[in-house]
Length: 364
Image 1 (spheres, rainbow, N blue to C red):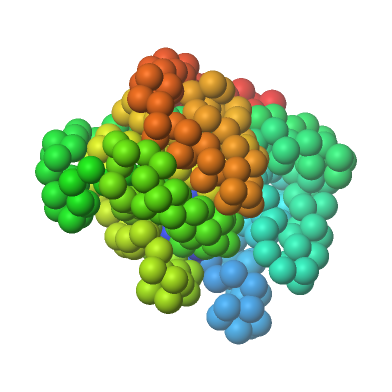
Image 2: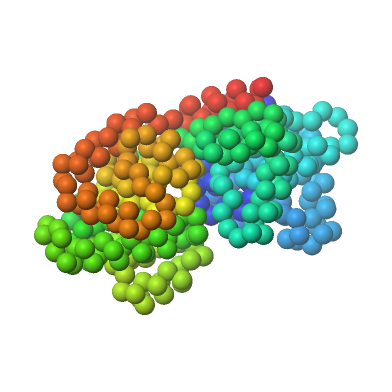
């Protein structure tokens, strides 16, 4: 079986997922070729067929590359695209093959449309193309599956995303806190996120100020202050740095890190303030490490955590800060959350589960 795996430009979890998935399928005897842009291919060591997205290389080059991609699709058994843009491209290429057999089209939707009106309008149009033109649509959360079904998808399934392989802990909790200059007796909160609108980082900033004020008022004598670290990079980095400095927020931007397991294991609480999530890999990692988690009840987060986290409404700093303060003041409850997280982590899908699902989807 030959599979053309199609992926737009990605700097994070989707590209890592595609890289792992391609390697696992190849071990299963599937001939996989990843079609993506050069930057993503180099960053994640992906096998590459050079693909220019519409308009990015001029229309003459775009037409040439589209014809090249369509020829590749015509010689494949399956075109498996990841994301709306890649999905629409795959559908259009396959459905316009002039003659011969057409491959099966599978599209995995990894994100819900989040952004301004123009972006949502474009996304809605692409969603219709993907839903009606694909043989199978996989959604990483139940709401994405429901959207595809409502738009007339031929077949929809909840996509399995494997739990990450844990990297070893390299430093003790005390060493982590010392390296980050966390004051003795301060509460230590950790968030891992791309610095983008989908992650609800304005809510994080607002929440951090409310928690800081309550701790400084002596509401919890056990904690003399707050350090909230945010690991990740992205387009909102300068904006967030400006807010933190201007408002004196207890938030530290760490940038991209290679010691995320150390951070998660050392946290008093791990917190997600996202507006939407599919199957957040970092929360799966946090559960496996036995972190006490507070997360917004959005997208597929409830499906992933399933009792292994304390869920809160998105966009409500007052509520979220209240839950954080309550948990900081209740050590037995935090310990119960840690134990529930570890138990839930044992039930998460494996990479073998994902391969089994896709082989069933690919063969119809």
